[in-house]
Amino acid sequence: MGTRLTIKTPGDFALPRDVCSYGYFLLAPNLWDVGSQTLLRPLDLEDGPATVTIAQSGGTGSALRAGFDRALGVAERKTARSQITRMLRLDEDETVARAFHRVDRRWKKSGRSRLFRSPTMFEDVLKTVTSCNVTWPSTVHMNRRLCEVLGRSSSKGAPRSFPTAAKLARTRPGTLRGRCRVGYRDQRMVDLAKLFRPRGSRPPEYDPAWFEDRSHDDEDVYKRLLELPGVGPYAAANIMQLLGRFSRIALDTESVRHGRAVLGMTGTERQITKEVAEHYEKFGEHKFRSYWFELWRFYEQKRGPAELWARDDIAASFTASQF
DNA sequence: GGTAGACCTGGACGC
DNA sequence: GCGTCCAGGTCTACC
Image (cartoon, rainbow, N blue to C red; front, top):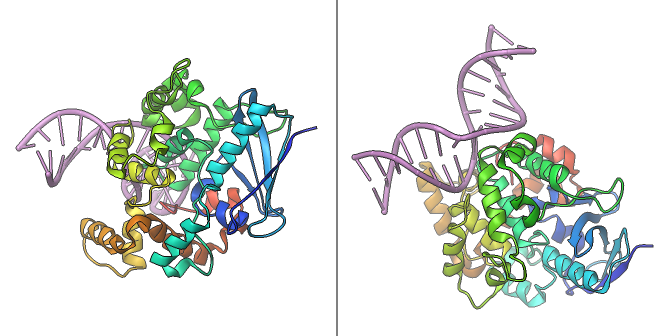
């Protein structure tokens, strides 16, 4: 008999809307079940992986039910709660959304404010690196292969977990390139894993706790992220938003497309990139949210509501830079 | 400080 | 089925 946890949520939390709010919900090992509107994925806990299914049957603001495929110890329950809280941003209470909606009223009705992320910062960093310099299907493929080749299953038939920093740090670059198809990112990913790997009883060289610490200002965090292998201006800005720091926009070719197609901008790629950055200045500390929800609305106008997207269909049909 | 070219993969396309 | 071209962000060398 597996463990069942009840997890309280902020009054404005809606599982389908807040999970299906960022492209990572479509990447392994996440699995959004369209039929049951539940999220399934393995979590890495003290005694190994455990697969959790998360449901919210009582509507917006109601508690979550998290069912695991095995019994969890006391410490594991605490870790699982913490990882689910991070992933679903349950620590962002209603005051965060209210502050955002005061700056950008367009999202008040839908209640959009949270952006889905991973249970750990390390997984967010790796997912960001797999999204650089590739089209979306390749990102999907890399994440699937990383889990299949290096992840662990909690039980027979259960999906494999995302590889831990410790596991990835021990992996040969050739394995990543040959079996996970990560290309030239192979050595960079091993180097990243070494930086995020716990060192015995000491914290890792890159300690997620430092990055999550709100007393450090955005500029310092951004500069430190830029020192990571495989992380440039786009990736650093994206990791910033995944850390809950929305004062920068991750500018890429998709920003240029959005500038041209939706904001009506003209000129060279460089001019539009600059114009897009200036356009969102007015949203201050929330500018990434405003930018992202505009992009997301564009995708939903083309594909329908995100909570109805089937992972494999979207992976196959979405082309360049659609997330 | 700015810029050109290499890095790798998967998909599209032409033959 | 094969070859070629293209998209994508980061890194390094060079001016």
